[in-house]
Image (cartoon, rainbow, N blue to C red; front, side, top):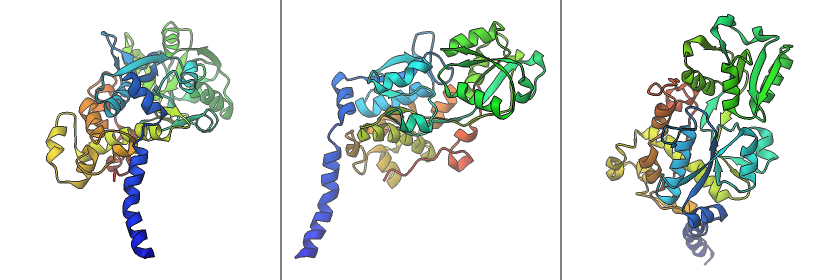
Length: 340
């Protein structure tokens, strides 16, 4: 009697668990009730989040938010952007003003453990560097002794710069600003000798300058800056939705699924593709979403490689190589757990 009963219970448990997990948690319920995703974004970081000539936000971070809106609401356009300064971004998430923060936020121990936040998945691997005028003749960061350096307040960049200077016994004069745009204008106006922030952002800034060739980005990288979309503690379902939506974009790139060809894969017999696109399994319902959650995200913004290419890659004004942000199968660090 005992063994058959246990066998029946074992068969029923997955269905019971799926039914429980399908109930919307607090954040998913709020997003659905307003039929809109509120996404915290940057006040301006080329390649990551920057309004275009029509006022539409463009960048990797913005495309991640659009993918989430498509996965949750079935429509990538259902996003309200909340531009946030470096100092305001974490309090805005903590206080519930936004549903998710996708804004070149570096994953650190203190932010993850002491601020009531959860980092979902590394969406971009970066590191802090230095940009300065070519005419200064500086080739190494250690030659910046005595220099004035522009940096943004409340950022890991400000702390990293201080740590680096202390470690290398270098005296410098920090010129601190609340926003990237203020630091950019001041650097161009000659108020500081160098500008220090994430190397990818330096590349974006330089591409926007009137004479980019007059400025050089040093090879020296002084920190690790893993960027990740961020959510509040206490809502595991929402955490899972953000994390696995990003993983779906990576998995699509691994499988060769793009924004243009995703429909052609709907008849595929490949089990991995069928699970990703919702033809098999209950992976969407397990998170309270439609079975086509990942299909909707991919159809809206493309796979991770497409997102990178149009915002930061060779097809963009910034022209970055994939490097660490390439797939693990091509020498990069981007690796998604299996959807199964």
